[in-house]
Amino acid sequence: MGPLPRGGGPVVLLVARSVRFASMADPAPDLLTLVRRAGTAVGDAPLLAVGDDVVTGRALQHRVEAAAAGLLAAGFQPGDRLAVLLHRCTDEAIAILAAAAAGGLAVPIHGKLKDDQVAHVLGDAEPFAVVASAVRLIALREPDRVLAGRRCWHVGTEPLPGGSAPFAALAGSAAALVPPAERQPAALLYTSGSTGKQKGIVQDHHNLALGAALVAGYLGLRPDDHLLALLPLSFDYGLNQLLSALHCGCRVTAADHLGTGELAQLLRRHRPTGLAGVPSLWHEVASGLAAGTLTAADGRSLRYVTNSGGALRTADAAVLRREWPHVQVFAMYGLTEAFRSAYLDPAEFDRCPESFGRPLPGVELLLVDPASGAVLHGPGTGELVHAGALVAHGYWRRPEDTARRFRPDPRGGGGTVVYSGDIVRRDADGRHWFVGRTDRLLKVQGHRVSPDEVAAAVAGMPGVGEVHVYGVDGGADGHRIVLVCTGDAGDAGLADRVRRQCRARLPSYMQPAVVRVLPALPHNQNGKVDEAALRASMGPCTDAT
Image (tube, rainbow, N blue to C red; front, side, top):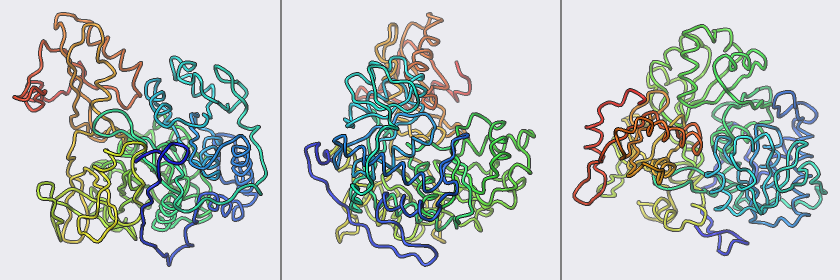
């Protein structure tokens, strides 16, 4: 889509059907109202915590309103973007919510991104300002270059390179705030596609608040729940966890996760009732339970866990169910272009642990034959197409990409749907099962990874010629990334230099598991790399050399 107000283009609003809920309160119309409802409901009880920093419901509301009003006083206008480049802290949530409450778009930047990716997001989003911290900037090689010329506010006591003002000093009157319209864009969430660099996906207040209400509804969230949030807020799945907690007024503790030993400590200390994860986390948990790093007692407080970002491995699911039999397991599916799509009833999980179930209320999941474009009815296999509620506005400033993925409903009758690129099987009972992708997009530890972005990190290196990247099955982690380049096969240090370059320029989940140097790559009649022939020549790629 084209840029939003102050960016030079119209906003295209997509109409989603209205959904009513019998089992919970209606969703808030916007995120400012969501915060205010949570502040009133929770009051002086804890709502959000990171480490020893605990924020009550009333304090969260006050800080979001003050920061939002302060943004407006500083010249922030509807449609402006606020980039949030922070380590895990309560101000991360405050800044995201304040940007949306002020009528702008929050741009949360993943904590693992390096210089090139952060610079790309900032250049693409063109934010009004950046909220950052010296702690987060430690991960960058040249933070002064990445932030050069940008208006910045800092979290913490240390100013940023080039100068910055304290984010805490942003303050204004809540009376200056007008709740944004339901269809006003609220967040710009960056995610990788099958080619090129990350793309921003525009989500509005209605979809974010409705998605929170839907998930809170089927999880049965209550005010006495306590969620342990390990997923980044730049990930739609992680952001939904925060918003779902606000919807029901329950406590959420956010933390970084470094291993099963630390997870055990978090579980023992906080005694959460809910935990969200991706397949790689649940593989760690299953391995920890098998090794004794985690115990049955560590999961005693949990009422449920959720999985998304790929199918939970059957072996890992078996360990979870054996060691934590009282815990409900919700297998879920979503794509950032449509926020949340489906879940499997926990009562069916033991019989169908690899299914992600059926669509959410107000959502329709269509299967479309990739060859003919025909909609398939009943059991079948085709590309999954998300219709109905929660469809995003499109890609930020990428009209051609938007047109490819956000298309007219193939059944006719108007409306816009999202073609997911996922090949999915539907059984006779309406459950869905992931089969594969229609494109080259990789999934690693729940993250989308573009092979082209990995290849670009080493293109042009001395001694490196043609580069090709693909994925092989990596079990619970999703794909293992294989990088093959042409070069002098006798240069014993070239593969190590390629690895060092990747470590310097790519986040951890984009690191190749296998690096090979070949004198030449096979090509097809069109001059493109013949990936099938390359895979055959490479073998199973089980080593890391």
